[in-house]
Length: 345
Image (cartoon, rainbow, N blue to C red; front, top):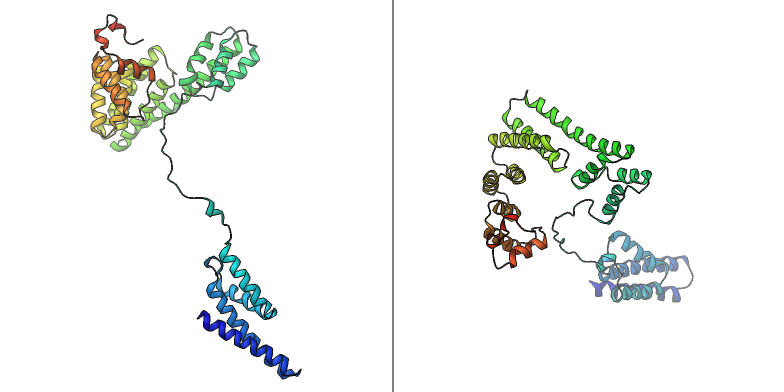
């Protein structure tokens, strides 16, 4: 079709020029020339449209219209210009932005967060709070700066400030701790009151789990101490077991119990919770540090060493590198050492 359109277009264009040059100057000659030129322009437009690069072919109607009028209003020279433009488009195509980019798969990250408040600025704030020589206004500013920091990172500093000689600092620290504790405690009271009026077992299981999680938050955020800590541990254990009694297929709840029993030093309870968490689908890789801690509580130091060696082949398991070296490279177990009862330094 390209050759047919091209040859036909050239023929009509030659005929139109010949008629214009040798036919005189009458109206009939001008009309004949225009008619032949219209046909040649249309044929040239169709011919050029066939070889235009794909990216320039759409919208097709506007492309044909542009080529037609270009050839019609610029006889002969328009055709030459169109051919030159076509050659430029083929040899030096338009540089598209997407040509510089390629797609790639998302990288995999290990979701291990650094402890909040442990960076340079966190250390500087704690230093200001603990330095009694620092002006009170600067210590207050530092205290305000850490009030939104999770209490498990700033709780020790806040509790140390409860005995601070500056009244403003002492009261503000107490207010921060008390406000966070009351916020969680109020939510616990609301849920426990709703538990008393709820009969549906599935709803009760969810509410027991939520209460256990709130008590866990009190413990994890270091908001309770002494007898309140013991009470919170007992309540967390009670509500977690109540939820599991209704639906034991909750590996996350079993894992909560693992952390609780290890924290309280109950090796038997921790072993049972670890086994249940694993049986209900919790990843053994994530349980490795807790298995090692349980083995240490049971004084099975050789098993601790084996677990640390296994952790070395699981880079997703976060652990202290000094602990890795201590347990992996020792030729004797801790039980063989004269100071075994003191544990690792």
